[in-house]
Image (cartoon, rainbow, N blue to C red; front, top):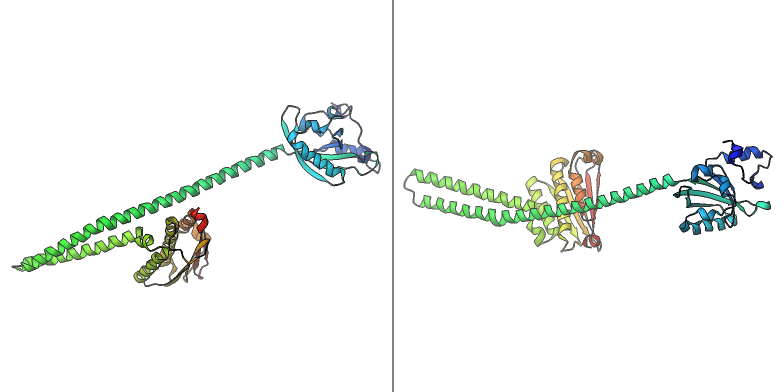
Length: 378
């Protein structure tokens, strides 16, 4: 359809939109071929002009809407916002507004429009508005928000699952440690006593060299059972130190640092200040396990005998800083290859805490953990 026929019935552009240099046809051509909809309305919403882009965006021929009220095509919930924008535009300000506009097919399209009042002359009460269709963008933004919300929910579920798994793991450790200490270790102790009794009886009633040899074998077996019992006790302590439940986190960490230092010839300086005596079990277990992992990494990788562990409590949080003076590492590279740092981070997150690792090759390593006591207790 020829352009002249397609826009037949339209009023000509308001004079303020005609180019002052007389190139009105050029100016009209620019407006009528623009991808955005150009609309001229009165303050009461009466439409004086619509550019041909209207048909592509909303399905109406421009001449269909001339003389009609623009508010009849705006979603009722959006009309107050558009009216406020027009009020500001009539005062000479520019205003950008989004609103839903009725498509010819009955659907709603989201348009973003920028308008300004024509300044003087007979068209001084007109507002020229340039609008573009942002429906697809709004749909994409809504889908993105939904995906972000779903991701947030997944992260929360994963965090909750991780916390439950860690709690379950700690409960299993506590149960196994108790069974090893209360059952297996006691049975080994009883066996050691019986072997000792047999060895003494063999020595007391010996009549030849052969019983003496049997007595020595029994004594050797008794010693091996005692050593096995010590190993079981140590394993039970590693699974879950009873001192953590009985005397608290500070005492348990102090004992662990002393035992580790003696076993591996280390110098570990431990200090604790204002640490609550009674902590939630999950918080105490979390910090104890992080310290275990960090100090064991020191034994295996740091190549230094010097380290320090500091516990510092405040009214709202508990901080733990573990520092060594070894060879250090690149955290970005280390995080790709091992589960140690990831495990420590997950443990900290499971009690709403945070963990920071500061290390450089040749500069040692500093691990800082903060756990919010109030939030964790909620």
